[in-house]
Image (cartoon, rainbow, N blue to C red; front, side, top):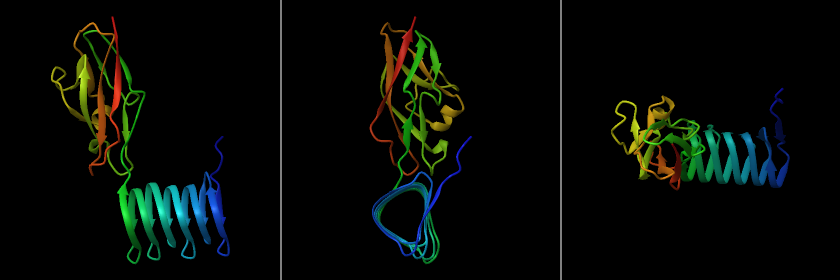
Length: 216
């Protein structure tokens, strides 16, 4: 049985100097001078965070200044003010709200076990267990994989599985249309490198290598 989400409230007459960590929601009516990390954060018109903020979502109607990273949606109300280094998934702001500083969209994340196996001279479907890209503000069709350094074969799409491609999308993976085609050589492993780019040009970081085990 799952536990209900916790909710912590920092009262209007309270000043906390140091670190605040919560696995649930934190409502800030007072002041935090330090760092606050929570699942979700609500800053009331009387509240303020000065230092750093880490959360999945944030609803700001007071003041937040410093190093800010919101993985999902940050909402800035008409009395809200956000200033500093801001990384976000999605953002919305009402008329009257204030936003200044360096803004950076959250880059896509690339996960998976980065391993597949194929029969020698055969082909294997690349699944979401092997490769998955996620970005809170981009659809699967807007997350594009770029390939490099292929070894022992190539990537192809189901519509033309004898034609190598250099790019495909997360949507292609999710519909089962991406294959690794082995070239029949005798090496025990094959593979390729890949990186993901979102619609705004942000990348998943360093290229990741996908290892293909060759059987037979």
